[in-house]
Length: 462
Image (cartoon, rainbow, N blue to C red; front, side):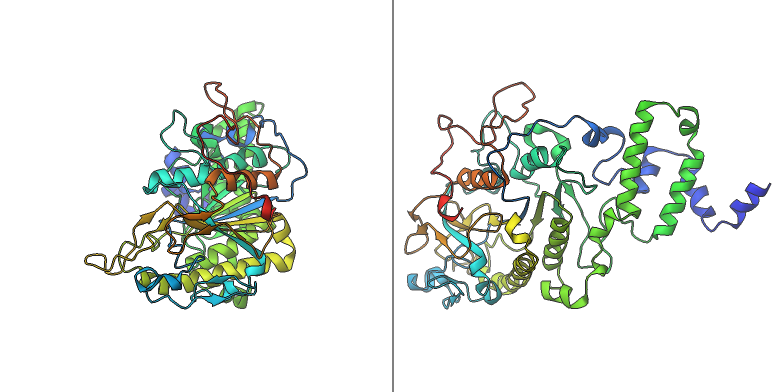
């Protein structure tokens, strides 16, 4: 009776009756237990399986990577490779590039804050792969491999989560590969490595009053209420009482404990931007991208090996390219510049690689005619990428495009050249074999006799 009276006086009674009258997987999913990086049940082996061996190459200079993925492919001429001398049909109204704090380096006039940070990053103006389709270009830029082969290779984040995440060197509760906020969606990030090496996509919007991270923050449910649900679930868990010595149950219990540490403990607080001062949040920009950059900085501070900011919306500018640039570039300028400055001020830029790139550039010649009305198409012949930190030298330009930004003029850089350079700075040996499900030979970096175009690592800025 006393127990019944306690239930009657408990404000959680409605939750108890509605949610636990019939316990099911769906019920528990609503509690957010399984959304936290797939920690429980079918994916519990993610955190409990033996870790693969890691082969290192020299002393690693980088510990983390922040990849700013420009979903859709931004114009190189309208960002880091302006061509005002090519004329209006190529540069349009963005014909007044500005000087940076690095002599001789000019960038788009809509990025004045990044112009002041140019000593911290290097621009690669001769990226090339010749692919003009989103899906295949995305795969090539993020894996270094041409599309259409027998195997689907993992992207850089998947490899880093394998070799720098699920082993003894990474002990954090935060999953080692995070995407803010939506999956890229145009290729399989994990490839043949399997689902355990896919990223944890946060969902939600860090610019909102509360960042509703998938499986960690439940909209409209307080932490106290979440804790009450947990306690009631355990009270109803008959298996826990009759199978105390079960190894499998102990594994699940440990995974649940980790999940709840993310939900209610210190682990999940990395996503709580209310802990940041208002002036800091303003400096990054009160928008999804700016606040994603701030979350990425906080994740690096916690030691997360790989973070992708999936910067979707607006960069596939087939129509009205310049109107979009005037809206989006100031937003990018603010968030990325604040990220570089904060990483530099804290000393973390020395051990954090920042990699900015899309899957390709845009057609150098503007399509003024209807229905494009000043748009730019896909262009994989030459485009730009930006790298900073983690052993990459700042204030440099690698390669060059021709006078109109149509072809590589000097020092072609293929995706695998950049990726292999990132692996080297992370201390990952290029000869490391990836665990192929059929036992086939699959290296982190393809050998010279494989059918992959390469021109050599970026030694000039390493």
